[in-house]
Image (cartoon, rainbow, N blue to C red; front, side, top):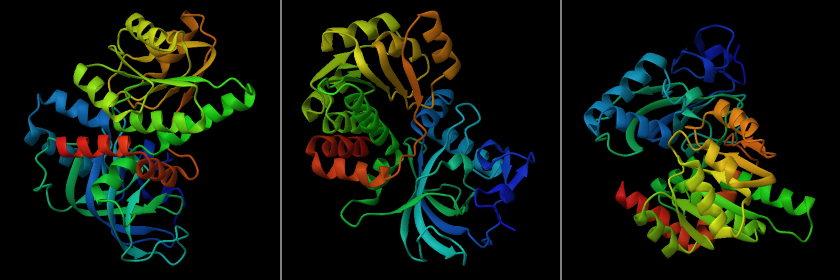
Length: 349
């Protein structure tokens, strides 16, 4: 009997959900409410790819070999260091008779659940991937559970572009919700929003979402001059600040200078560890910090806020908000700046 959350696919240890499992059962036969997808492309989580790239000193062949080893050993793409994975793009091959995902064989889809809980088999040894980018051409198959989430690929966007958007679509949706909640609590006082890592995919979409939701002012924080130029030219933020997010005092000063005070909402979208304390310092008392990076140490965030006597709410971006995929696609379609930034990043990859 199949479980809608995939318990029957857990090989070891018993009694945990697929995301926490050390290994998953990757049998190709689908259960009553499962779907098998022929995988065409993986999109590795930014924190995971950065960790692998740094570990192997930019050796793409070594990165490719470790991804193959992880998937082969664990039956899923679950980086043991970062705890993150990514998502995939593919074509539905077979649908179990009790599946309620609304998909049929032949549908081109992107999964909106993490590769850390998705049974995955790679059959082509990643021969078409050089190990040097987050997007991974791939041939293999994956299994979706009864409670998995997937989106059909839009016909008006290149698959690579759609996959890049789907990979981070939870960030703008939650950012918009937090801004709207601030407005509801304090009618007539629109919040200021700082996005740390504003030139990245999730950061850029979060800036656009904050503005669309009614933010008073926005600032995108980036670490290097080239990203400041890229973000400024895209016109996604009212201000663009240059600061190393790992330097708490420098980050807080940059945000405060750009906004004329600390941010009401700070959204952390960077893929490096050590940014928790700066985000807290950059946020006003009574404000909210949203952590979207898988490089975040939530112990450091909680203990840091306590140690700083910071009266801030902290949210973990879990990647799912109802309607998040269509919302993110809508932002990409309606804002030329964010689309140009995404396309520039894909060309660079």
